[in-house]
Length: 209
Image (cartoon, rainbow, N blue to C red; front, side, top):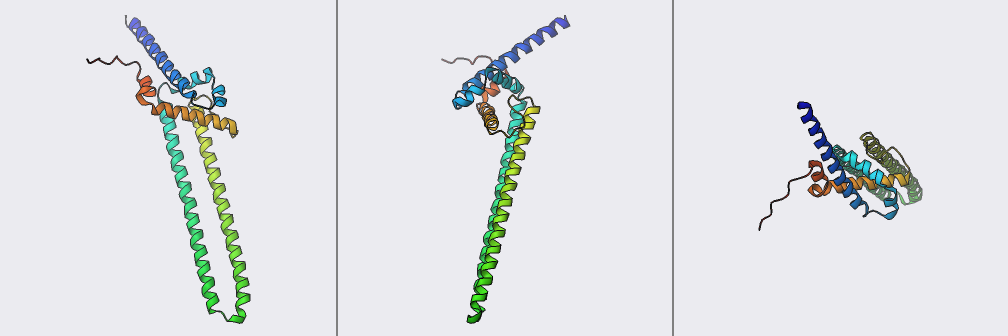
């Protein structure tokens, strides 16, 4: 008898899983229609079905949310670092300008051309240093963001999310961004799609006259 009850429960679980999968797949198919046609063609029924399977238990929603939060924090940190560097350069230019003005005011007229030539060389050297530091910062930002993308790809691939693997191919990256957007939109739909599907079928609402 217990074995029979267990089998019944297993069958009911299977039916619930199937229903949740169908709801998620339907929601994804609806969302895909909002994407450019070139990406719609690449998101086959099988890909969407596999994506819906990966989303079944809700874990992937949490993973994506965590990854996006990390990405936003990283972007904010890098933006602040670049801002700090720009402020440092502004202060450096101001200090140099003031120093040059003070030196010129204290200089004997006949020595002024020599001083100005030396100051011009100093200014060019400082501007060169500033450009190099800005380029280095931009390279650091690009590398850091590329690393974060690779981390996201690897994490989602390990979580079994269809379409995700480590790549730098621009077309594949755009496809993955669209897949992430689908998951995010599905999550935002809340009880209308994702969360309702995760909870399983709900009893019909009582009608009031």
